[in-house]
Amino acid sequence: GAVVSQHPSRVICKSGTSVKIECRSLDFQATTMFWYRQFPKQSLMLMATSNEGSKATYEQGVEKDKFLINHASLTLSTLTVTSAHPEDSSFYICSARAGINEKLFFGSGTQLSVL
Amino acid sequence: DAKTTQPTSMDCAEGRAANLPCNHSTISGNEYVYWYRQIHSQGPQYIIHGLKNNETNEMASLIITEDRKSSTLILPHATLRDTAVYYCIVSPMEYGNKLVFGAGTILRVKS
Image 1 (cartoon, rainbow over the protein chains, first blue to last red):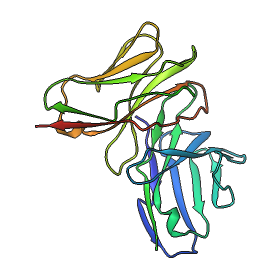
Image 2: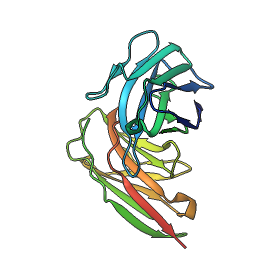
Image 3: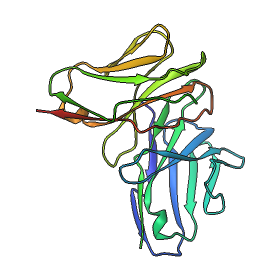
Image 4: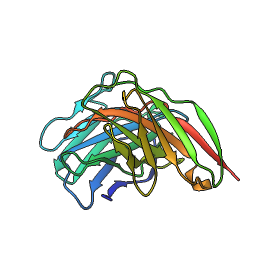
């Protein structure tokens, strides 16, 4: 199946710093990618829809200035957590679709720990 | 997106079939039923999806009732590695559509 690569798999940062997470579709082009967040023992929560060449669409309650999403090419979307705080510590997961009527494939996730 | 209802957890003996139910009574005519699973600390893995006909692949079978208000995911011979959270999601299969995850079912396969 299609491969979605996410990097880094784990990151620890100090409070107040910014962290960038990359999501790449390795063997297909993805016009749309999705970013999710998951807290321990909870389900995945959709944060935003990332569209290549345009602004991301954020879900209600997700701060767009806090979570910057850039989808500069058909194979790369990035999520930047700006001025991270301990409450931003979470498991962040991206996903992408290979094309019209194709299923969604997920990255392996990034565990962010903010000290 | 239509909501789904799944049992919180289930146990299954290794080697036996695991039958995971899902209720989606408000599903619309253009919405598909998707199943994903998530093993601890990993991204979700696609299992199977269907619209109204039963589907089977190398991983599982999906049985959808005639009225489409419920479905069952069947893992024919569960192994310990099938222990995971299983998510049933309904969503229209169109380009760019998002998947909204519910709480899922924790399946524990025991030896």
